[in-house]
Amino acid sequence: MIEHDILGDLRGFHAELVRVRTTALQNLSLGTQIRDRIVERLVHYLRENVSADEAEKAFAIGGAVDLFGSDEIDAIDEQIAYLEALIADLSAGHPPSPTRTPVPMQREIARLQLHSRVIEVASQLFSDGHYRQAVLDTYIALVEQVKLKSGLPLDNTPLMQQAFSPDKPRLQVSADKDEQLGFMWLFSGAVMAIRNPKAHRLMQQQDPQRTLEWLCFASALFCVLDGCSPSATSA
Image (tube, rainbow, N blue to C red; front, side, top):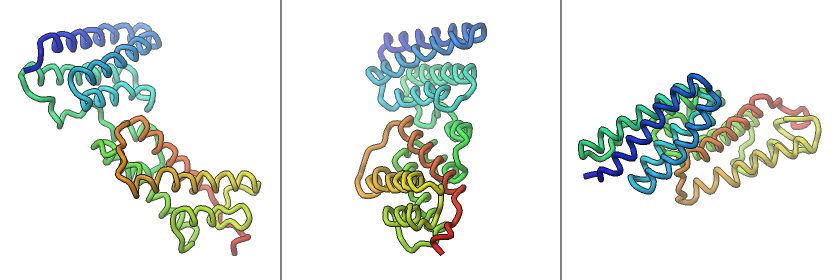
């Protein structure tokens, strides 16, 4: 059975968020600042007193405003609803429900306006909390798209370095050789530092914010790839 002081503390967080919603309706900037501080305390409290999973759920909602640009009042309402569901579970002596999703993450990913291929590959995985797989599958898809567009029978780093070579590129990002070289290293680095380690080692990826940052980087690379033209020098 959950300790009564923990339930009391969670009700206290709930009351704070209800008050800050009123503040936000009158002064959105001030309300959002206060809400961010409340959520930061809530995430730390849940991690110390309830579970890391609940802290991660609270963080996912708490990060929604900054990460996704979602409506601040809606985000406060989602945080309030999350706490009400958690308090109800714990008051009844039930473990927190694993099916209680704190925020519709697929919708929030869509609000980021990521490249359509990233959304297609990673949205459901991210929503289900499979962060490592979401990143890995996205970067595998990036490699496959470069392979398809360049027509090269290569893979991973050799593919990127030949496709975007500043001397005889298959895919030209820029007529400026230094800029072309920079993009070659961006695509090569995506394979060497992000795709390969996650494919070859069992690595823990538990941070939704870091996952989103890697997905945003992949989205930028997909957009660059869309804008590439086959180079006449590769013919």
